[in-house]
Picture 1 (cartoon, rainbow, N blue to C red):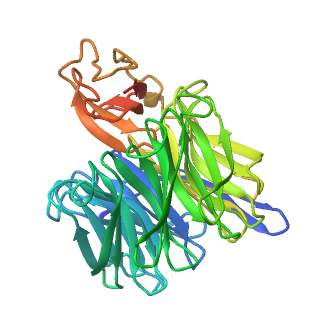
Picture 2 (tube, rainbow, N blue to C red):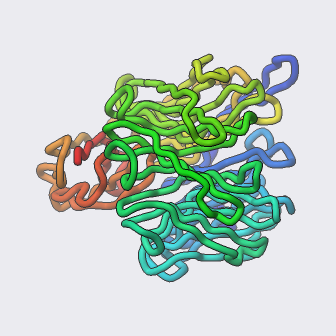
Length: 472
């Protein structure tokens, strides 16, 4: 997606209206260029349109923050990029009280180290008002930002500079200008990485992610509750003997919390969507797993108007597509499935965020490798209250139907894997949520990564990704 002043979206447009007592918009759209674009965070805006943040390789650097605004039908109103000459990646966006936007992610173009938390504040047109970086000489990443009731912002992510272990949850509180008021870290001697933060009704904060420092297994869901100053009130871990991680948390109307993530301990050992409901103290009330074909992740959850839940993420690594599809799951108040929807093609799709919209439907932000103009494109889906879009998904471009096949060995592996005959090529490794872990030569794939399920593809190619598992 060329998100610049010379920006030109290449769109396929599917727009259908239906009536369920009132008019609901239902549509799908892709936004992109011949390069790579991904949507990581989106929400409905006060004017009934949508704001989406992610990344593009068609800006000033290797990757740039990309922000674009649409109307209620998904038509582009404007686009912006933010970044420098290196790697800049947006993970979270929220509209602010002045109708502008706050965005966070990671930058390698600015700041002190290998990667810093990057905060960008814009006006309602996406023009930059100010930017801030936070970090040290080693990597620091911002994964989630929310406006706070005092007019400032709360940011979470993880830091390899400030804390007790290899990486720790990092919470940063700023004023309305992005100036730091305080920071806190939470974690142990190993890796602890936060994915989402929300301010709670008592003006404190709830944070969820994954921990390898605490818990029962190779990795557990880690939930941290703080007061308004970031001091820990309590922590909880949830998991079994294998890898489990929390991606999204929301406070519920009863004062408790709903968490979505992935479990390899309960259900399919390659990963199932996991939903955890707790009381206000973080004690488990119930859990549910939802299994697709192979390797599923619940990347976003929200309580719905009927007190049920909507979960968006991925299902895949198996027939019929062989890869990940967008997966939408609607439950009742106790987590029982009411319906599910999947969308996808022959390659790779993922849903990063979901929100119930003012018309009762759902807005999904994600990415697609099967449709659109490039290697990846931003994919937006607007459904009705029943989760249906009411349009047919087009056939993928023929060039995407015959990707190069390759087989890493051994698989599963302990220290590293290789691709025979391609040891000098470069391969890109992604975690189960689709986040890039690193680039490796074909002779030493996965060196130093934690145990878990990953996706591997050749660098710079549209090749079908291959699932690869590190066992310890």
